[in-house]
Length: 336
Image 1 (tube, helix red, strand yellow):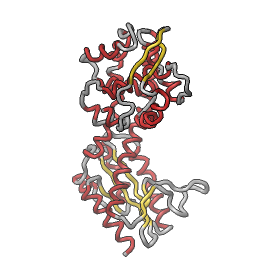
Image 2 (cartoon, one colour; image 1 turned 90 degrees about the vertical axis):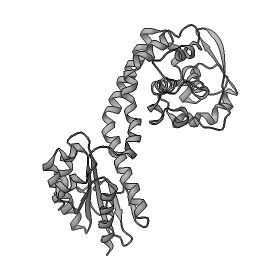
Image 3 (spheres, helix red, strand yellow; image 1 turned 90 degrees about the horizontal axis):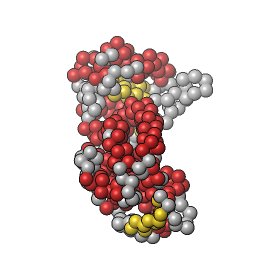
C-alpha cells in the first residue's frame, strides 16, 4: 500500500507545462465572454460599409486581430479543422473574389491568401491556445477568414456552397443592428458557456489520460496500450467494465490504469474511491491488476478517499515522470 504522505511529497499538485499549454485552448472562453461587449460595440459602429470593420479594429486597443477572429469563429461555429477543409475547395468556388450582397448593394472582396500553400490552421491564424496568449494584429490571412465568416453566406456566386458557408457565414448581416447583434452574441455565448463549462473538467481529464497513455507507449513499445474494455470483465451482466487505460503485456497479462488529476476538489476522487475495492477484487479474480495515477491539489484535499484508493490499488503513483517510471517498472514485472 502506497503511503499517502510519500505520494503527496512526490506529486505535482498543479497542471504541468505539457498540459498547461493545451489548457489554454479550454480557458479562452472566459476571455471571449469578458470581451464580448467590446466585440459587439465594434460591429455596431462598423455599419457604414462591409469593409469598415477592419478600420475600426485597427484603430482600437480593446481587441487584437486574433481575438476578434476567434470571436467570429466561435459565433459562426466554424473551427480550424473546418477552415482547413474549406480552404481546399474555396478556390473552385470563388476564384479570387468574394462577390456578395450587403444592404441591397453588391460588393467584391479580393482574397489575399486563398491560393497560398499554407492552410488556414488555428496555428497560422494565431487562434490556438498559444497564439491567443499574445495580441496579434490583423494580417492578410486573418482578414480573408474574417471576410469569409462575415459575408460568405451572402455571396452571389452561382455555384453550390458548402453548408458551413451558406448557413453559418452570415454574421455580416447584423452589422449595425444593435438589438439583433447583441441578442445573438449573448445567447450564443450562454450556449457555449454551458457546453464548455461542463466539458472543461472532462477535457482536462482527457488531457491527463492522453499524457499518461503516450508516456506508457513510449516506454513500453512492445506492449498494447489502449482504451479497450478489459476482456471477460463486466461491472454487471450487460455492461463491460470501463477503465481509463488498459495495458496488455506481450505475454497477455493485463493491468488497468485509472487516472485522476484534480486541481480543485470535486467528487471524482470519491467515486473512484467508492469503486476501488470492488474493482480490485473483480480484476484479481480474472488474474488482472489495477493501478492508479493520482495527482492534483484537489485530490490531496480528500485524504480519506486517497487512503481507500491506495489500499485497494496494486500500484499508486503521482503524475511526475519519475513516478510514472515506477508504474512502468511495476507493469514490466507482470511478465516476470
